[in-house]
Length: 334
Image (cartoon, rainbow, N blue to C red; front, side, top):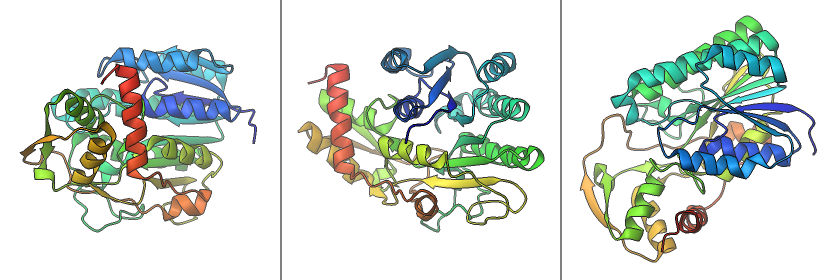
């Protein structure tokens, strides 16, 4: 179905924001992109993503930080978006040990500015990124949106849990329909170079050893990026209302939705898929678990399915093959 709405996508030069911007443009949205182009990882990769978008009709890009209140307000004032998908923020569990103030600035102050823009100028639906990391020390799986989540194990996760609370208060106070996504280990072409798929693929292709934490005793609900952004696109029209239960709120038009593959994969099996896709064997350095990490994640996606009729289902073998093919092409790797 062709759309005629305007979507503000923050983090548009990022991994997920880039993919989502393409999907929304294909669906007929006008897309207003906002990204700080920070040097947390290779700015060249971010620019290459934007180069893929810049020639598209209906796409306009702004370079600014979400923590810049004046810049954010000006974009809202100029474009009056119908839909806001807030993906920008400082990512990374391990980086939050090194530079926690970056997470306060981007994830707390920046998110506040986006909520303020939505409050002042209005929109049909505010959708914002959270993370499976908010489940923290929870051990009962699969994780459900209705689970109590008070035991975050990294400062990154704590800022995302704070975003959920902030968003609920604004949804209640200002009647802003709001959906929070809890993402589960997203991977695929154009992925970030600080994440395991890149680190493993790069090392394996070079014949270098890979670091395998918790001695390989890890499971992750790996979610292919094309599945994830399709879920977001569909959730745009699943506008929450008050008092609906199932991850929603009794007092606000607010909902939390897991987006995962609902099929946790052993880390060793993920590495094996990269080995199969590259035709090379990995040398493993088995190490202790890192601070802030959790040993397993697993999404209950029944709410996503009931809201959209869609369930992410790309097999890990296919997703990894797609990633390795892109990696070899983009980086010119043998």
